[in-house]
Length: 148
Image 1 (cartoon, helix red, strand yellow):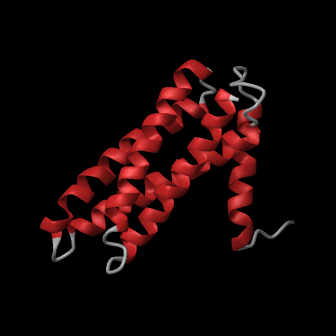
Image 2: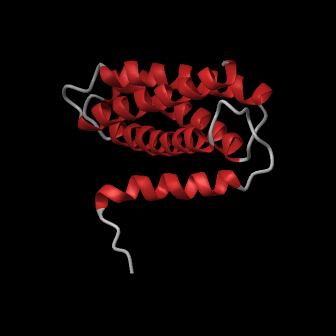
Image 3: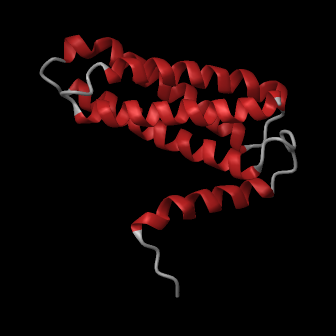
């Protein structure tokens, strides 16, 4: 019996995602490995969770009116990221994957910017900004592989 410690959780999840992707018949391009796709899928899942939780936390803040734009953007980002994650998980072809990843980068960058502005006094915004920045970075890595 193997004991999974907290530091292994991310590796186990990515390994499971990669194993599932290896069974998908449609391959994106040789330049985009199943490992890279698994990493972007896992970053998207973490991003979706972070922006959804952050939006909910912002609604409960005393200064909710000042957070309105960030709340809306987080909710939009969650929708874009969730849709892109489902398509990537199915093994989309490069023609449909590129525009989805570009939309994901745009949504994530905008959320990171808006939540980053509140990160100094809202921990959920700091965490959200980190997750959206990471997701945008991972999407760009896959885009580089698609165009490479």
